[in-house]
Image (cartoon, rainbow, N blue to C red):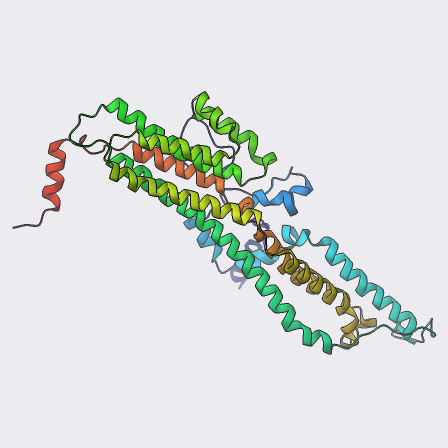
Length: 414
C-alpha cells in the first residue's frame, strides 16, 4: 500500500508540473539552413524567455512566439492523455487571457458594484448570518430578467461562430499559399535540374552548376522577399537585408532591396535565370508555369493582408458581445441568491467573460495570419530543399554503367 501511495503521488506531481505555457514550447529543432548565413529567425519559435519584458508575453508582442512547427514528437505530446491537466495548469500564463484583462476587469467591476448596490438597497447578511434591512431604502435594487439574454444567446453564438470560422479560413488560406510555394519551388528546381541541356550539346559541369545555383538562389530570394513583404518592417527589414547581402552578389542584393515591390523583382530575376538555361523552349514553358503560381500565391496573400473581415461585422460583434456580457450580471443576480449576498456571481461572471471574450480574441488574432505563420522556417526549408535538388546529377551526366544497372533492376523478367 505504501508503494502504491508513493507511485500515485509521483504521478500527480508529474501531471501538475508547469511544463507548458500558453505558447506551447517544443524542444528546439535545428533546421537545415541553405547557405552561408543562418536565418534570423529559427524554425521553432519557443516561448518567451524569463528575461523577456511583460509586453512580450501577450498581445502584439507575443505573436512571434506562436509560429509553431510540429514534428512527430509534438503531435505525440499534443494528443497525450494529460493534455487537459497541462492546459488547465497553464491557464494563468495564457497570452490570450492576459490580453483580456481590461474586459474582464470591467465585467467584474460591474458585478461587484451590483452586489454592493443591491446589498445597500435591498438588505444584506452579515458574517454571522444575521439578516439586515436595507441601508438605503429609498433607492431600487438593480436587476434584469434573464429571458432577453436567453433569447439573444443563439444570435450571439452565430455571430461568434461566423467570426471565428472566417478568421480561421483566412489563416488556412494563407497556410495553403505557403504550401503551394513549398511544393512548386521544389517542382521548379527539379525540372531545371533534370532538363538542363538538350539535343546532345556537351554540358560544361561548371557552367551547369552556376546556372542551377542561380535558379536555386533566386527561388529562395523570391520567397524570402515575399516573407519580408508580408511582415512588419520593424521586425524583419534588417534581417532581410543582411540575409540577402550574405547570400547574393552585391548587385543582385541591391537590385531586390531597392525595388518598390521586392517579390516582383525577385520573380523577374528568377525568370531571367530560367531563360538562360539551355533547354527546349517547351520545357521552359513548363517551368515558367510555376512562376505564374507564385504570382497567384503572392497576390492572394496581399489580398488577405490588405482586406480584413468587413469592419462593420467585426464592430457589431464586439458591441453585441460587450453589451451582453456587461449587462449579464443584472440578470444573474437572482439565480445566485443561494450564495452569501449573491457574491458567487462575481467569479461566475469573471469566468464567463474570459471564455466569451476569449472566443472573440482568438478570431482577432487569427484574422491576420502572416505574423503567426512560421514564414522564416518555410523560407529556410525552401532554400535547403532547392540547394539539395540542384546538386543532383542531371541528364547527360550520369555514367552509362549506372543507367544500365538501374534499367536492368526495373526491367521485368522475360
